[in-house]
Amino acid sequence: MSEFLNINGLSKTFEGQPILNGIHLSLESNTVLSILGKSGSGKTTLLKIIAGLEDADQGGISLEGKPVMAMKAQERNIVYLYQEALLFPHLNIFENIAFGLRLQKKGKAEIEKRVIQMLGTIGLEHMKYKSPNQLSGGEKQRVAFGRAIIVEPKLLLLDEPFGALDVETRHSMQQLFKDLAKQLSISALFVTHDLKEAIIMGDDIGKIENGNYKAYTSKKEFYEDAKSGVTDEIDFWSNLQRGEFSKL
Ligand SMILES: Nc1ncnc2c1ncn2[C@@H]1O[C@H](COP(=O)(O)OP(=O)(O)OP(=O)(O)O)[C@@H](O)[C@H]1O
Image 1 (cartoon, helix red, strand yellow):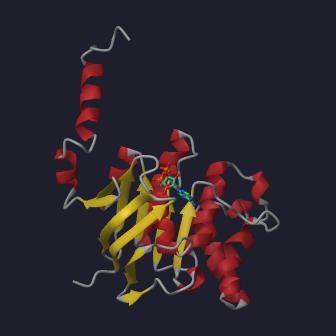
Image 2 (cartoon, protein in one colour):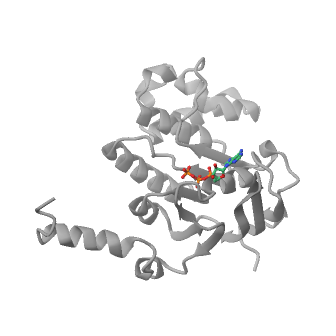
Image 3 (tube, protein in one colour):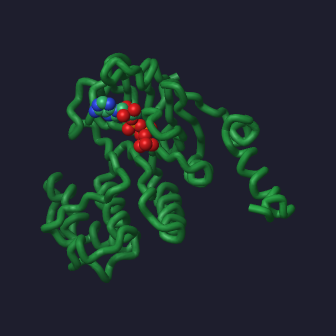
């Protein structure tokens, strides 16, 4: 079956150490797939290979049926976003968001209209003339989202994008992303090692372990997998409620 994104037998070794071991993964369009995995399991490596920022040793990737391995990163129409929202420090917020549209040589009026609209969507209209160093971490991450999404990439790769944010900001960013994903029919891989975040963000869930990828057929299957960590989490909170940790 031809899926939106198909990853076929992807392998990567670093300094003789196998990291990805023939990964097979597929994603339907307009779907967010959460990928869980412990630190060092190869999540970032996988995303970087998909984005074209790292080479694979073996395997193929196709997007909308077209092989992308031979394409340069900038030709893939894939955006990779990670924890640190790297904005252009010398450009104000408006220009940071407008950047991709200027590269695409869109007209002045169209850029103005789309950037203003995006600023509204991410709730930062009042900050358009500020520079990145005047923004909080959460605000910077919003701008990074706006800048990524405004160019309408085919695929969004999110690498622990909220990892550096406090709990409250993290929740509001999760909600914002979920709303945007629905509104703009976004297709994305969302990498995290946070169990709850994976459940909240993903339409589907999978995990990387020992260099292999396991796709869960449903969230129910994930909850019921003794190794998913969900049961441990539930047990923890049940024990806490029963007062079994009162001596801690
Ligand atoms: N350029 C590199 N050279 C050598 N080893 C590397 C390189 N990049 C990553 N690695 C190693 O590959 C392994 C997987 O790294 P990766 O960053 O993909 O893991 P991760 O699952 O994203 O981890 P984390 O959740 O901590 O970010 C790690 O052991 C890392 O040290």
